[in-house]
Length: 138
Image (cartoon, rainbow, N blue to C red; front, side, top):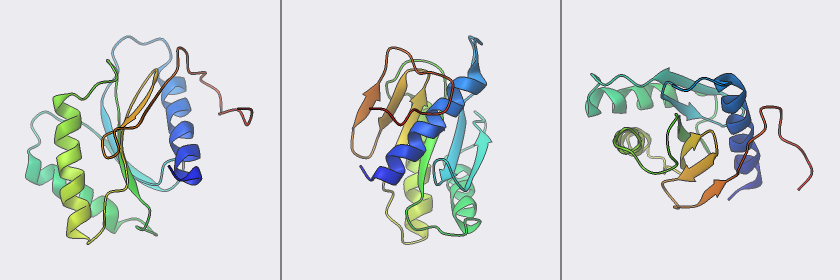
């Protein structure tokens, strides 16, 4: 994975954990753009169909200053396994990026414990993600 993308998704994960706090129930949100940078995001709505989700992704890409290198991610509670919601947004992201002639380099699912990339099937899991900014130490 590209170093910039890895740093950005770690920043998104830390921000998500900080925002989630100790709440048990977390809303699901989809984001399009550059992790840790310019992005658009909105909450998941069960009444939204595939066509509308694809249009939302396409419009989000339209709004980016630089679309090259953009990706998509879903932030949600629950287990770090593919859910129906993830699959719905993944399909919409592939369609929206294709409409712009772009490949979807990554589609991340983030939860309190890590992330899963549906494009590469790569995953990172921690026993505890700290809510602060990511450390430079490895």
